Image (cartoon, rainbow, N blue to C red; front, side):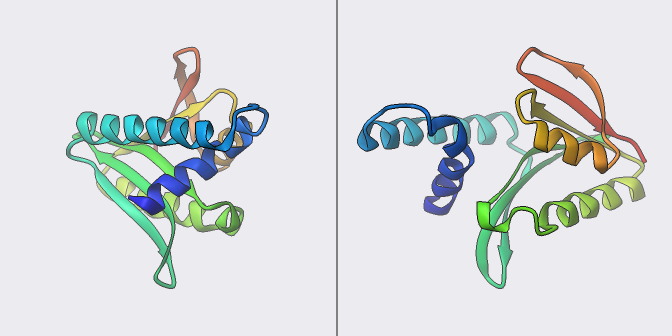
Length: 143
C-alpha cells in the first residue's frame, strides 16, 4: 500500500504543483484522496485484477483491469515517472488487447479530458472515443 500511495502522489504531482499548501496539508489531502480512490476501486470493481507492475522485481506501476462478460475494462494504469515513455504501458495494453481479441472482447476505459497525453497514447493503440461524461472520455478498442 505504501508504494501505491507514493505512485498516486506522483500521478497527481503536476496538477498539485500550483497549490500553495504546506507539505503536511498536501500529504493529508493525498492520503485522503488515495484512500477514497482505493476504497472506490475495491468496492465497485470487486472482481477486478489489481496488478502491481514490476521491473526486475521492483514495483514501477499498477494496472487494474475488470474482466466483464463482453469486454475488459481498464480501471487504471499508472507508471512511476521514471518508467514512463519506455514502452511499459504499451506492452501492458497490447498484452491485454491480445487476450481480449482471443476472447472476442473489446477493451474499454475512461480517460480525463484534461489528459491529452493519455488520450494520444490510447488513440495510437486504436482506441476511439465512444462517449463523454463531462470530465472524462469513454474510449473503446475493438479487434
